Structure formats: structure tokens, C-alpha cells
Image (cartoon, rainbow, N blue to C red; front, side, top):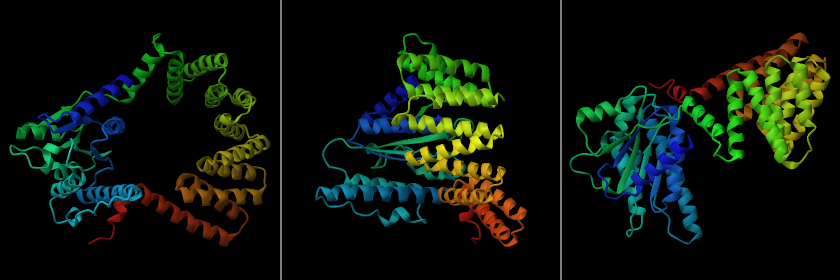
Length: 431
């Protein structure tokens, strides 16, 4: 996997740096899963070539107008950032984008060309400066819209004035190609296709396995690969294989004396035991990790161990120990300023208090979980806490509070739905 990524960086660098090449457009034949890898490679090339301007846009495309609106908004933010830096050096600011960029009546590709012309005008007149435009949506939900966006950016026999100074990066869909057949049918020259990528989960696993088995690879890298394989085994419920790998890694980090990695391995092994139904053994294993010497770099491993052991205690219905470990987890999460784990911790605390009939404490923690989770848009935890609050009020025959929280639950579910499909709701109610 690393070799494939390095090759991609090298190929992209050559595409960007070669000012004499005939193909000015590069199309990646990839899946949605592989877009982040292309972006990672592109960022490496960006750092390697500061003389060029890189503009890449990866937000999903559902329709042309919303994609262009997000694209132009992103560019405006980048212009603001550039102008802030120029102001520090007493340089004049870049002018605002031409109004044509936001003109919905114009052809989409013409608006992009106007943007490219604007950026080109800001670059130094001397030297070799190019614009690298990457229209690489994370998902192409509407191939027709994407085609409308890029149709005017493809090479023609008489190259437009902007094109020799620009490199364009586009993408096709490996599982439902639409761009490659069009280019072939129209016999368009000046386009190269990059179709050798394979960053699929299967390829990634094979690459990790090769690293772990390669005796020429440094031992610490082989151990990191083995940890990834242990996690993959765990995800596929190959518990025995995962447990053995965690043990090998633990022995290695014990030998080299890295306690934070020892804690990680203990937590992994304990997770395996818990999911295998061996709850008592899992609890003992988590405790083994928590007995490791404390230090600042152990806080994150300790938080994971505390979350794991508290979950195990809940499964064992050991409410008192669960309460103790959740309180410790809350303290560690606060020290680390980790707000997302605190949502889960508070929701679990409410449940544990409720099981012990500590209803005031349960209500307080569930309420706190709802408020923080809503703020962070962690809707599933907020919903679980609200459902339990409603049950508590129903049991206590507090009808008014029950109705209030039922209304809040309905509002929360609507907010979650809107957050999951923002563009769908943007268009609701329009004529």
C-alpha cells in the first residue's frame, strides 16, 4: 500500500511538473473509497511544488449548482486567508472573485474558467507557475451533473488560452464508468487515464500482511502492521487469531519497554475476551492494563481501558464497579479535553445510576449527555439518553416532563434526519 501511494505521488508530481506534456487532463478511475488516497498524494505534491497553485475540491456532487456554490465559497475562504497573510507583509490584497463566478445563468465550466483566469491573474508574471485544478468529488451521486460541470474543461483541437497553464484532475467511477466511454466515443485527445490504483480494503490488508511478514522491514514497523491485522481480525470476529496477535505485540512492547503500546495491546486482548463472552477474564485483563505505571502519555490508553472495563461491568451487571470506572473515565476524558467520549460516558453513567435506583443522579447525567451530544451532533447518544429519560418520567408519573421530553425527542430525530441529508431538506418546499 505504501509503495502504491509513493508511486501515485511520483506520477502526480511528474504530471504537474512537466510543462511540455500533451495530456493536460488526468482522469482517475477510482472508487469513492480511494478518493482520500488521491487527495493525500495531491497534498504531498502540493508541498513539493510551492511554485504552483493547487485547487482541489472533494465535496460530493448531487447537482451542479450546489457543487459550484461550495466550490466558490471554499475559494473565497482561501482568498481571505491569502489576504490575511499579505496584510502582514504590507502587500495589497487579492481582489474579490469576479461576479461571473456566481452567475447561475452561465455555463458551469465557463464559471470555472473565470475562476482559473482570476487566479492566473494574481500569479507572478515571471517564472513557471501553473494551476492544478482537482474536481474530485468524494462521491458522484449524479454523473450527469458532473458531466455538465466538466464538459467545457476537456481539451479541444484549439486549446483555450487558460489550458496550457493548467492541469486538470478529474475522476471516473470504476464500478460505473461514464467518462471513459464518452472520451473514447468522442475521440478526445490530451486526456490521460490513471487506472492502476487499488486501495481497496482487500489490497490494504494484503499490503499490511506483507509488511508484517517481511523480515527486511524494521521490527517496529512489522509490529504496527501486526496491530492493524489484530484489529482487522477482531472486526471480522476472528477472535482467536486476534488474541494471539495482541499477545505477540504485547511481548514485543514489554521487551522494548513502551508502556503506552503495552496498554494498547492489553486493551485489544481484553476487547477480544469481552466480545467472546468471557467477561470475568476480560475484566481481569483490563485491570492488568490499568495497573501499568501512570504517566502523561498513558492517559489516552487508560481512557480506552476504562471505557472497556466499564462496558464489561455493565454486561456483568456489576453496577458498583461500573460506577467507579465510569467516574475515573470521566476524569481522564476531562484531562484530555475529549468531549466526544464524555457523551458516551455520561449516557452510561445515567444507565448505571438508574439500575441502582439512584434516579436523581441518573436524570442529571442523562440530561448532561443529551445537552452535550446535541451540541456535538452525536444524535444516537442523545436519542438513547432522551429515551431513557422519558421512561424515567413515565415510571415516576411525571406527565408534563414526559411530554416535554417526547417533543424534544421528535425535534432531535428531525435534526438528525436533516443533518444526514442536508441537501434534500434544502430543496424541500421550493417551487
